[in-house]
Image 1 (spheres, rainbow, N blue to C red):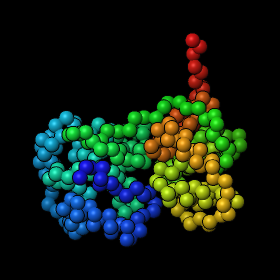
Image 2: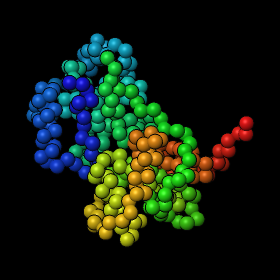
Image 3: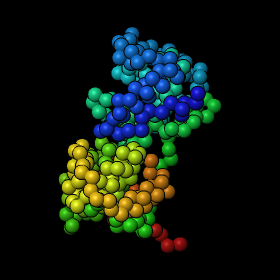
Length: 293
């Protein structure tokens, strides 16, 4: 079985797998790897990270290993290699590519660690789900362009909010993304005029929420409710072709995570969450003017 056959659930931190699906996923992983469900909850002896490192060196000789953390992941060890994360069992026999969620804390642990490793990237997609090479774990997705053209994006794919006189910004977001929620608060703090364009990083459920917000009689209020985790009513169907355009634009430009922040004056791009001070500086910066050849 290739590592990409074992995928963590593609669900956001705020919403969780249905019980039946979750049980099926755990049973499937247990059957595939030999881990029992009980082994994830039962206390274990202190891990020997040196032994894990030695086993990884033997099995992945070309992969640089920066840190190994076997604490708090229920039998898994987190391995940091440059800007990439992957997971192994304590015998370093099984390699797991994907995302780890703390379901009690409702937190995406992989995304949080990736952000700590590289603050310029918020990869909601977390560890990349590609089949690795012969002896290498997956590498980080290439960065998106530093500038994009927003021309052609339809108005019906955006929810606009914030004071009309505020600094303008375009944000590609997913309502199930915790860092998008944090960014919303920072943008509100600086009085930004936000053109928010939902994309469905987390799949069908995120798309459903985006449609509920976009088709709502009061989209801005529904946006706040969505970020707060409140249930949304099912509005009358509306034209959602703008969401399709957002998705196509994100795919064309390699947006594999959210949020992605774009300065509309020149298309300059920032990936990931930024605090208010950084946002204010970014939006106040003079637009880039291409040199004349």
